[in-house]
Length: 60
Image (tube, rainbow, N blue to C red; front, side):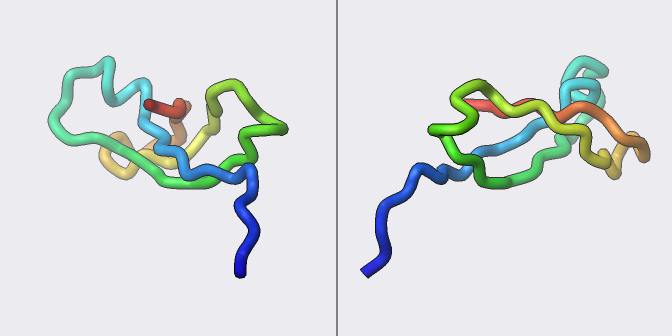
């Protein structure tokens, strides 16, 4: 039986796309260790709609 760990699934959403008001969203799903990183994640990821690297922040 698998152990219950500290890893949780999080959703990352593009901040620039959300602020621009364009339709659609750029979201990624990843996991993080909530014990080591209790803060919200901020990672630079590729936004295919804007066609450039942008900052994606954890939501929820």
